[in-house]
Length: 163
Image (tube, rainbow, N blue to C red; front, side, top):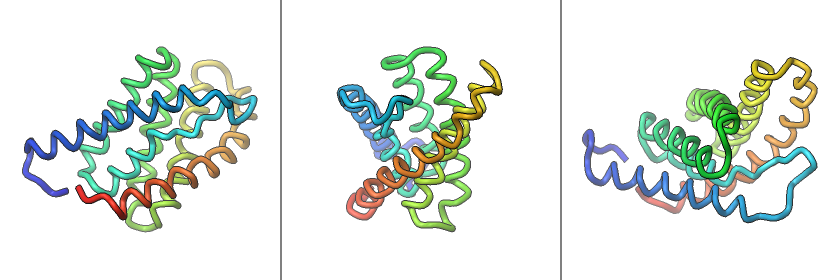
């Protein structure tokens, strides 16, 4: 999608993608089964973020990501959730942006999920204590699986949806 600045189509696509992030975040809250005692989430809304990384402008993807974090934090989390998501989301976005043209979309998604978890752990270390670092290997393993799943779905969407 390479449109002029502030076009109606560009704004509409971004608004629809933010709305889709909200819907996926809400659906995820309805899943009664926890993936583990550690509280992992699939991160279904990240399908939209990975998709937009490949289909939209960089700035638009960043806005979609920040809107996803803000809306999900307000509706389904709280201030700490918002802070953790912001740390993880920005780090994840930067890594995916760097790798976007070098690796396949599924691999980019896996790295995005891993670095999202690393960002959350770094934030927790700053807020709580460095004792939480022991949790990092578990989060990295979870990131590999969830990132792979999200990457497969984003790859399907990216190959089939024309924006």
